[in-house]
Amino acid sequence: MRQCFLTIWSVLDPIYYFCSRLEYIEDKTRNRDIFRVRLMKYKGRDIVLSDGTEITKNDLLLKIHLHNVRLIRELIRLDSEIKKGRLIYEQVKRGLPNLTEYLQCHEQFADIKGIVGITILNKGCERLGFETFSIINPFYKWYKQMAFAPMYLISQFRLDSFRRPPKYLFMSKDKLIKLYGCQSDQ
Image (cartoon, rainbow, N blue to C red):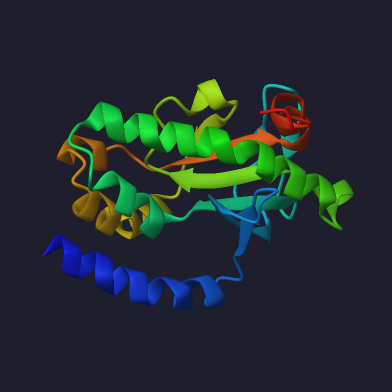
């Protein structure tokens, strides 16, 4: 049954990719990272990050999406929550330098304030440099939780993982560059 859902999702994913205006992040060898991104104007509440960066309505941000189908194909082979969490952490950590390079080369680099994502997989993200903020709107929070449900069902995360509320992940452009810029030797 799980394999059937994954097959359906794999067929629908290119349509979602096309409709959502996402772009792949690639490394220097043109291999695609776990990240897919798009520019967006922020519509949430005002946020002040720890480095003093203020994110306000209509600020330009780079919205990050994990490539969930690709990630789930790797997760379903693993048998423990710890291994699954470690895999996600390592995939994100490996992709952040390429994301930084993409951002620095973007034609709207000067106007972009930072990166944002929404996820239930927010445990340990602070070690990567992200800051988490709760989603205040209860309808949007519920919508995002339902949107993440297929990933949890297919990848067989524990049910209590699904009960964690989705959160915004933010990182300022300056912090991203400081932590992950110019790492070509890795």
